[in-house]
Amino acid sequence: MPRSSQQAHPALAWVESPLQLLSAAEWAARRLADTGQPTRVVYRILDPQVVATAELLHRMGAPFARFEPYYGIPWTALGTARHWVLGDPLSGQARAATAVLPAPRRLSIVDDGAMVVHTVRAILGEVPFGRPGQRESRAKVLLGELAGEKLRRLASERRLELFTAFTAAHTPAERLGAAVEVNRFPWLRAAARRGGAPRIPLPADRIALGTARVVDGLLRPSAHLEWVRALARAAPLAYLPHRREPVELLDAVAAIPGVTVVRTGVPVELVLAAASDPLEVHTLRSSASVTLAAVLAGTGSVIRSGSPRTAAETQEADA
Image (tube, rainbow, N blue to C red; front, side, top):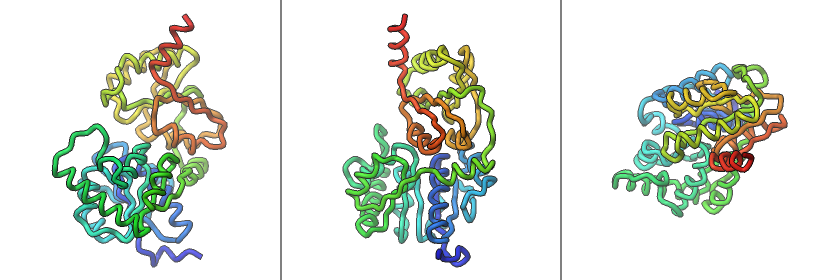
């Protein structure tokens, strides 16, 4: 029998993005079911979608003992917690807290997208302890080295856990010596289908997911619009934006015939979790192709990954 949550010391989940928050809720549900121990969550109040996701999860009865908004680093909460749950150990704030504060008794890493694979390899020391492609100050590099060393020590003492939907992270995690648990989003699916998630009407069962690749400079706006245009030529399309897509790009997408932009303000996993009928989801290379495969399991939905170049080549070949 699990211990009473009334007597247990809560774990602390510190999240900086909507997906980290969803992943932490799944981790908290598993922990409560397995041990009876509660989890409190502190979430970043400066991100509107994080706040909206937290409010929605609260209404859905997410298994957190407490929801606590924060600015900056929650030093006091981290300093007193015996078990940390982090979504992005590579962030500047997370590495500062990890480097400076005494190590917790246990630390669990939950998903913040496919970057979790790089994160585990960074802890191993196989790649630099930072996000790829970013220039960092010497101070930030030093904090990363200190944080990585502390996390490796936790792993060597069997006090580090990885909770992930990304199977590509399993092998490096096993090399690290971290315990691995698979996240299949069972709590989210169950809570959404009980009626807890908002029923956002979609104008079509064909869906295109927005992307941050344009704003990050990895994809030309014209190429992205052509990808959406090619999809819409086949049949009507609902477009679910990425939270960082600019208004100008969304206005251009909305002007494409056959496309309806559905601005939800919460992660796509929350929007689609209540789906029971098959959906056809189109996405560029994205973490959502993995998380949605878990969230939509059993619905008969299909997730198709493509690229703007492939769409343009297909159009040219058909002409």
